[in-house]
Image (cartoon, helix red, strand yellow):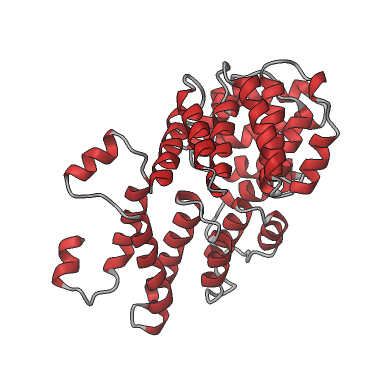
Length: 354
């Protein structure tokens, strides 16, 4: 593609693939994979890749290459929301999908997915409820999973119908464990521990673990039953309902929680909520307590708390405190998501130097 770009610099669609590749390679954590790719001259550049895709999104409607517009927006929305986790993911996706016809199921999917990933859960539900539907459309079972997840993130337990419909319609192998995990959570929130155990059994035995969501579901199936109030706080936070989540954790007494996982998770969840509400002092205090409660456990709560604490300090230009927090995250070993958290902490340290 680079060679083609040199031969035909006026062919703007080169930027479609090059933009995507630049973002993905540039976003890889430091390590053997990135070093090996670099040896072959593939270094990637996130900023350059995003700029390529945005220029295409702006220029394609004015050119004869317009038929590729929807594909470019699909890639752009994906990297903004899932790869670089940009704060602009929601606004830019809504902006660039506006010119796609309302009859497009792809438009409904992109908007609903990005809304649900970025705390606009009510809007995601509204989009999915109004999506075009008839026998002329391709079957899209994943939209039922997306609707179920959005509903559950506002504690609407009717989401069970959507997860069951997804499992009924889905012909693939992905998200089966994830759907059963959500059905287990709904059973638990309904007070039905028997059904909870049954669905958790299905998480272990059905589907595959190719997708990260299914790997996470399988991992959670091996853990003890979650605390219901902490589960509610987790779901509300994921849905962007920060005030509701804050009221819930605020009513809990952490001293009455079991030592170990529940206590570490409580402070972690409370910290994430306060962080999202821009209550930095409260978030830092929570993160510190999460580190103390969970630093010797296998769960990610402590290490990720140290990482997020470092990001707050870095944002305040308190570099010494940020450095200490990032190093604390790196020093914690043998926990969930160790490689990802360590990579992000090292990137945080590099940003302090720059």
